[in-house]
Image 1: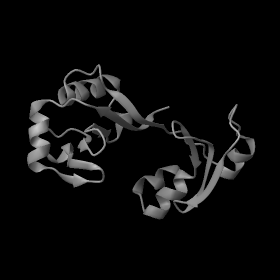
Image 2: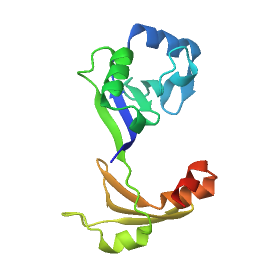
Image 3: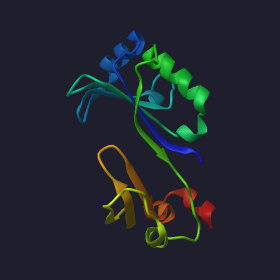
Image 4: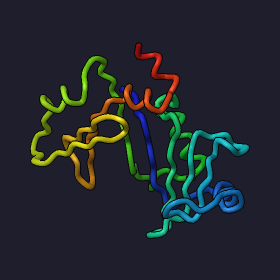
Length: 160
């Protein structure tokens, strides 16, 4: 099962990347600087957010992390942050495609042990079901094919 999204937090940045993001980056959200590293001379599949408003933390969001592999991700993190001992995982998404099943089919049968609350939302052009939703952990089930079709994504044709 491939990782669908990876976001890491770090207090450290190498001097090259710190200088680059301050020169070419712009404010975005709660961060003082943002730069898409795919559009730089480094051509790395990472969106870099620097100088978080609360504690100055930096965030690295990997693009298409499933195609990179663990060794390449470690190599990229080391080049951007230097020592990777203080890196924390902020977000890690796993994707699993179940063709022929709707979120409703799974919601009727899906239970998470020890969890008393759940949520339903109508969003992304379809129904989303959260069998577990807390500050620290979220489990989301939604119709990805329906979402891809509503956005006109060419990959939606693969599922036919």
